[in-house]
Image (cartoon, rainbow, N blue to C red; front, side, top):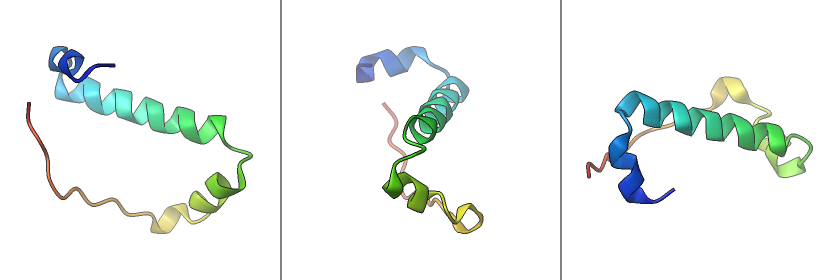
Length: 55
């Protein structure tokens, strides 16, 4: 996907696409040891958004 394509998506659609991509990656690599370690402590996972760029 090219960055210019993103202009055609609503904010909700962009978030949905990011969520789908995240779930797909986790499922695709569910047997990978690094992935298993990454998701082993889901209750303590935190994400912080430091900056949002608008285009």
